[in-house]
Length: 266
Image (cartoon, rainbow, N blue to C red; front, side, top):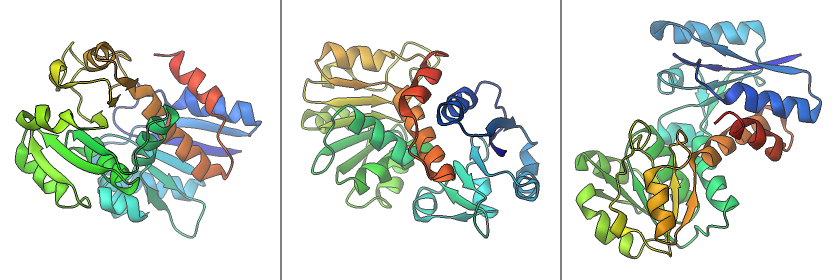
């Protein structure tokens, strides 16, 4: 039996176990997905222990996404983003990957959003913002990063090909001709708030909000009112899990079963 899992602290709230176990059931795999919650200063020992125990793969969440870079061999995308959210133990050494970028891109493409040659605005320069920005750039979009602390937006933009950095005050002008907007902040999770002025939204936009609790954030309500295409955060969560499943198993993921298991718990 293959054992997969999630390492983080805390992990009790995670929706990854039911999503992945639904995939194993659908594919008839003898596998289990379990959660691990090591102390913050024990992550290196936890990863070495997982390797010794023969665990096949791990997802990684807060606060360990950067720390595990020191104990795995990151692929090119994980190294560029500066964070690992998926570890594969099936090779000669543990390898680190970041499926958040691909998760965002697949979520947008699931909704028929064209990225190549488009203009994208990413709000947020933290971990999710980094992943989404690199993913969009690799997909052929021109990226503008807007962040509350403008210097952080400039720092990220300096690493992403042909990207520009901005403060939130620039959102009105940035969105006027934009094709894609991604909220990569946590705004909208704890309160009915949005980082984007409603009157800056328009019907030619596709809007992805990485927040998935609640599924319908204020940003997505405003976007729908403006006639924009809306993509809730559960799609990004789903597809980062799909990417991890496919990496670990070499199989095409049962997306519908995973999506149903995920959304039934939201």
